[in-house]
Amino acid sequence: SESTVHVGSFSFRNAPVFMKPGKETARDALAEVDSLLHHLVHHNNTPVYVSTRLIQRLTTSNPSPSYIRDVAEAFKTGSFNGTVYSARWGDLAATAAAIFLHPEAGMATQDNRTHGVL
Image 1 (tube, rainbow, N blue to C red):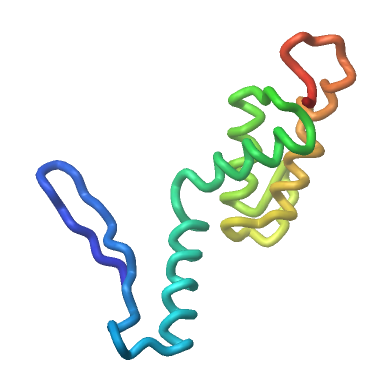
Image 2 (image 1 turned 120 degrees about the vertical axis):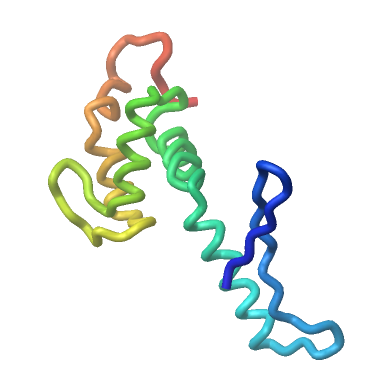
């Protein structure tokens, strides 16, 4: 379960805690790790972060904002360019398709000073 603390105009999510001091079990540890992973994968910044890093490693080190946006959208929706993969958040098949099939991915062969892979 998720809890949120409100301080003035700010709100913060408390880290999930399932383990009782002195009475830790493997089940508690797994539940805590699972909750943390769920939180990280479903964070609002995850699609942009993952998309940027994958694009930089696989196609170009300097992707345009529209390239990142399109790949992040594929990560969020599980579909790209009219093809539905899983239609679920975090779909890496749709993300990979967006990275390699995006029109900007083919620009690496063009003579462009701002485009390329390190």
